[in-house]
Image (cartoon, rainbow, N blue to C red; front, side, top):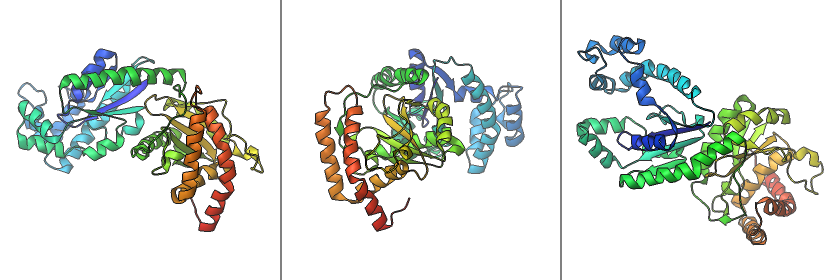
Length: 396
């Protein structure tokens, strides 16, 4: 099952996206609908709200008067925290129940306004954020009957655009016409969500195609941070640390559009024990990869053992290398990017090598030959990188 988090500020058009995904075949778990369900007449949730905020949050028919509750609950941080403490645990319990009822091959979309505020992002395979400028959102809310002051207060109480961008794997701009937004959702469904679910269910990696070196993307570090959060959540106590490594961790260096991460473990047994949790989190194991390509220059090649997983997401290529803390491969994966960040000549030489090998392997069906050919450059330059680390006192 592919778990997708869908969020966006009030008035952003999130519901439009959720409805389209439902039409396309997604299973929608609507946090707002569940929030209404847990405060139905006769529920424990409604009774607790009355105890905290007073009888005047009830409508004459005994249902919750939501505007009356909002007028009391959104006046300060304490009141909002009390509201959340009453409703959130009940919503979470019902959410888990509905998710468990979804088919194994579902694209399950959790439509949740407070995804960012609650810190839920690492629990999804993918996070979609719907966005529109504040003035556009205010205008939409006023059309629905909300006062402008109240609308801006609601917006100010939610996550900022920067906070949402930090967790968004997909950013849907809804500042234009609805037809354009729906077309974006249709493409997302066909090109990313459906194949992602299939890859996840079958435990396979997307087809990589031949190597292609692209200009540096300023968003690579943000992509890495999102993936690291998911890896940390999946690995739990078996993770010593998770680092962004490889070419995409070197600012300004052209590279394949593949984010490399290194998960540090204490033993290879820990790495093997994480195969299932990491696969469930979206990182399919590659069982034929049990070590780095042996380097003739390494005195003990057996110490270069590792496990390799790759992202099942066709829209965000990523490799996850599991290495034992203190092993030569582990240290090399950390030293090389650090050295390349400060050594202009080494960085230029490495880029020239990448360009040459890209051309030589342009007709390959995948990137394996390109990667193997690069190992000769690493073997030649490993002594230089290690000498730099020793000379400068570089430490992890």
